[in-house]
Amino acid sequence: MNAAAPRYTDVSLTDGQSARWSGAMSTPMMLAVASRIAATKPAAIEVLSHAVLSQCMTRGENPWQRVALLRERCAGVALRVAISLLNEHGHQGSDVMPVEMAVLWLRELKRCGVSEIVLIDPVPAGGRMAPVLAHAKALGVTAIAALPFVDEARHSDESLAAQAALLAQAGAARIMLRDEAGLLTVDRLSTLLPALRAGLGATPLDLHLRCQTALGPQVALEAVRLGIDGLDTAFAPLANGASVPALGTLLKSLRMLGVAAPATEQELHAVRTAEQMLTELADRHGFENGTAWVFDLAPYAHQLPGELAAHFMRELAEAGLSHALHAYATECARIRADVGSPPMLPPYARPIAEQAMLHLQGLPSYSELRPGLRRALQQVYGPSPCPPDGRLLQRIGVLPAMQPRTVEQLRSAWPTAGNTDLLTAHATGTSADAQPAPATADALSYDATTPADALLAGLTARAPRYAQLAVHGPGVAIQLHSTEG
Image 1 (tube, helix red, strand yellow):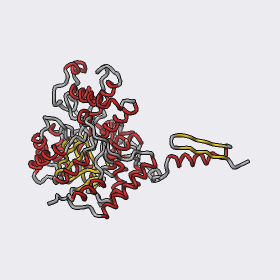
Image 2 (image 1 turned 180 degrees about the vertical axis):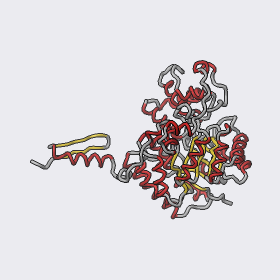
Image 3 (image 1 turned 30 degrees about the horizontal axis):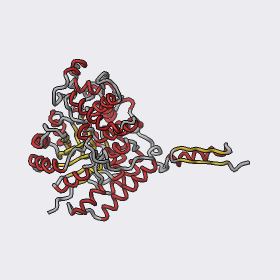
Image 4 (image 1 turned 90 degrees about the vertical axis):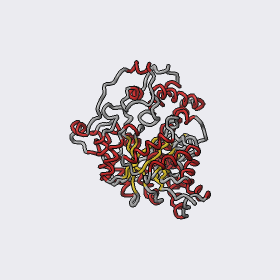
């Protein structure tokens, strides 16, 4: 008997574009493709995460306006947001999200039409998530508790199953096994999923996995065969590599194998239409189209989560160090062990990856120390799973314990700021008084022209002033001649 088809959540606008396009997708671009994504009828569309908040700040875009406009364009489809209970910007008092701040997030997101929220804590057994789950349940918000997958001996099937059961008992509406580094294999999944299910009872189990090792699509197929309740996917241009599996390929593979209820031609056509629109957008702006990475063992050593894996692979290439990938992965693993073997998730993963890059480029070991490593060693985010290196501890000294800033303290600091500005400031380490204002309708209109089109238009406007105007560059060769005199 075939397994029931899981519910699919689309993460193209968050993890997909962050991993494949380095977060370059602007609000007008998202609004232009939103209706096509919604037409594929996913169970939910993820529209915001901490990474996307930072991308909005960099571009001067208001993230809350984006959510509201996507709510309008995705009528009939649930919207989902991912919230991390630890921030990686490193500002004292704002690195840990207090319960009251998390509850304010829940209230504001619900007011904006968001009905599902993924709560992420790299150390779910630390006790931070349980009170937030209770509040989410009281507010009527579907809270999905993330269970990070780490490929280590101490994270056995039994220990992960026990953590999942505790999250379900704390009030999680769904549990999400979250494999940010793409380390799961079919063999491990075959024992892990039954163990998780045994302790969850009626609580649904979802899966979020990346494709760094190229095994992601195969693992996703096996997860459906084993009866996973929900799966995160993206459309082909924003899938694979450091991203999640591609929905279209998965549906066609399931139909070929006779697993789960087959997708209809109408459903496949809607997926192809969305893929085509995203492909055209990629071509127009010179974005990379999603392609699979070849299998490599390096991710099992560095264990970098999706977006960071993509970022540092590009950094290695730009520095002419692609050949040193395995040396880099080994250095990441060494530094992680020195810091106390924290999970390779924010806020730990980036400073470890940055420190490894410094060492690979010739910096004497730990002659400089990334600030995030100092905070991890000082136990700002909680006790480390293993004892850190004693010499590093001696160097950094002890950081006085500091309580997270309360909502009232933030309101006192910025008395004219609204709730959404306070939330964004806390999550991104920015000033609540300097949050981007909502854009005008004209600014949100997407102009479907390529950079080459814009260049040609500008040159054409200037051409009458010159007898000849020529521009040459990679993939561009334009020559204009004046017809006057």
